[in-house]
Length: 71
Image (cartoon, rainbow, N blue to C red):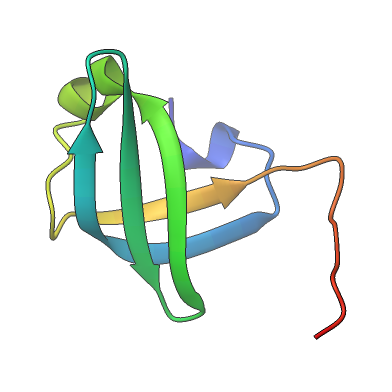
């Protein structure tokens, strides 16, 4: 699948900072110009994509709801 085939408007280019692998799911922290974005994906996907700290990636964020809190 090419990146052009993904219909997600919120895209953040970044670099993987840390991966916390679990038996089924893994937490992947991505450093972006806007801050750190954390993704929870399958550990299988981490291995298939050969993700390691330092890998350049794009974080795609698709949501039907955005919540706000007053600071």
